[in-house]
Length: 251
Image (tube, rainbow, N blue to C red; front, side):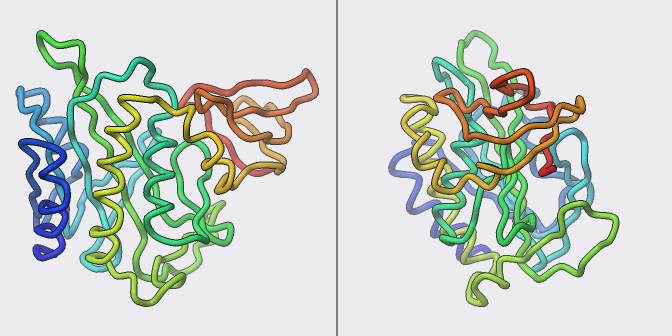
């Protein structure tokens, strides 16, 4: 993994001054660690890769556990000051999907799917920077690498990256994904989500599918708007779903 980390640093550092890459044998959560550092005043751009996570976190507090070799878990931290924060997780997910495989789709707002199964999750958190309008953004990504056994307790079954391409191990995935995500976050700061709307539509896992929101509302997904809000046609009309705390499942 250290060779892959060095390759990422060589590619990213010229475009991101002060950028560093760290590989940890084990950590509770790469996102938690970078948020701890941010609260302590450390706001340098960094890629933190964990060979093992003991207390990984997903969206809405869900656990994400990883063992060495079974998955790729990393977090990117850097200061950003976009005019509008809407759609950042979609921009990150799109960059990761485009970097890895044409079969990968994005399930709004922050999962990657392949063949209707969950391949990866994305967790974006921010911390304030004293004396600055920018915020320190921590974007965590966890990608299943090894095939995962079916689990009847899961609504959506997992899929491993090697099931799409046996050559895609964790090191190869890191080399592909991390530089694209850094570039996507920098581009998002300048231009927001709107320029990505068409590209997102090409990989939208929910478009045209029946969905049910966590408040019980049912409808049909009709893509996203220029801010990244999910458009759902319900019995009451077209609804723009914007909250990252709303769970959306295929009906």
